[in-house]
Image 1 (cartoon, rainbow, N blue to C red):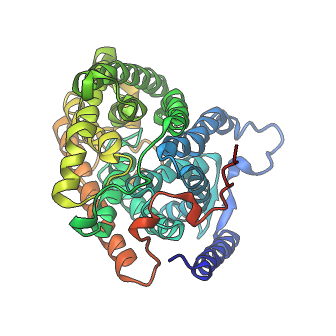
Image 2: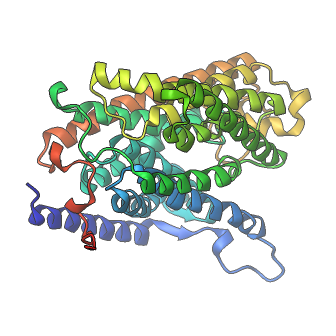
Length: 446
């Protein structure tokens, strides 16, 4: 049974973590030049403030979109939205420190609007993983997982972007694939015995919870172009917006068609509408700023919608039956497989890249294919500069392969820690219900 003392102890440890973060920010974090008082006549900082609308959009996606998307469980709405808020607030602080470590100047981490945006995007990683485990873990387990996952994510992202120099402006490889397969690996370790792997009595939606989850879908849908384009530069940012929108639109139409074909009695399935409509945003992420063409964006969206719906209908039940892996939100179908599609598309399009097509943008989008570093953060260790198109395509595939390796191994190790240590675990009759950790109003009697 649930022990109030153990819960208080867990949240007490969380407060200690927050105090440690305070001390680390005090010691190592300083405002960047853009956030300091300007010299007379200086215009420094204006271009960074111009990203604030994108920052707001990403905030809406993370806090509202992800939070409400997970409210489909009929008795888990408090937890879905509440844990999203708490986890993101913790992860943003932690990620500023962890990612800042790789770019320290004189022993200090520069704090800017861009670093906050980076941290917000990184918060999507443990939230995606949370979707695989939703309702089957305690809040302390989730927060502990997030702290470990962010470290591994930051290391993998640095390897992918700064050493392999892959193109991944929308984060399909480093964010979506990593978060999905890390969460599934943790779920693998926490899976119950096969005879206890049936759905819990509270695992499922009702009419109202599905409506709330649809609100999350709509927020994610509307703001996904900002998520994919916020880190893009120049004309590539507009391409990222256009391509993302078209891919989402194509995935949405495809989702409705395929859902009606494969669902019971040929009726639309709300699970597909809530999730697979968004698969186009994931699938276009890695290539959203490339010259894929409007037809290419639509094609990617169509394929993403198909594989996502088919994954929910056929693949997820099969995986659960064979391996015991429980994927509450179906993150493999919304984030995992579409991200793999995006990685494959990035290798294909990278193999056709020429300087004639991309002109001065080549070094911005593919730093290792340029003549000189695109920015001061480019640390191209493998292959040097002026990399060929075929070599870049190979590195795109290496990037997704390493990401899967780090995510799966890291998730297995993290899941092992959660399983075999003294961290409190939920029993089957405690799954998918808010009452365990929240004060829930009693239903009024008529």
